[in-house]
Length: 130
Image 1 (cartoon, rainbow, N blue to C red):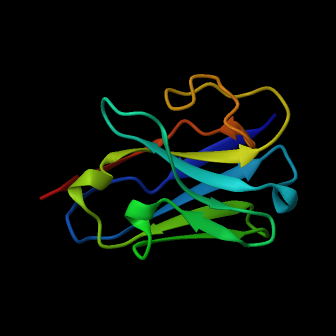
Image 2 (tube, rainbow, N blue to C red):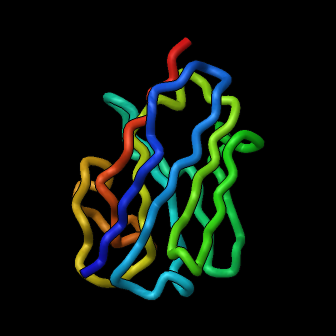
């Protein structure tokens, strides 16, 4: 059974930092592209960052220079280091993994296969206050 478990969400003040973690099991982590999405209240699901199996990272424009995505294959964990947090970063953050199996359903993807990500965690809340 595929499982993705996010942790590290919290309430922080603007300018602060958080390090989210997503521990994965049930699939071959080392060959899977990984992603971090977020969903703010009343807004659509947004791809924040992705990290391919080779270590190539990409970021949405609004977090470039502030967020860093990494992975630890020995721990089957992907991290999202978030620095200089802004109020507009407030959202539920979801971890997602590449796959072709049964698509997980969350409030973010609505059960849709947002290629290449089929597997999703249940999310962790990040709240940034001014």
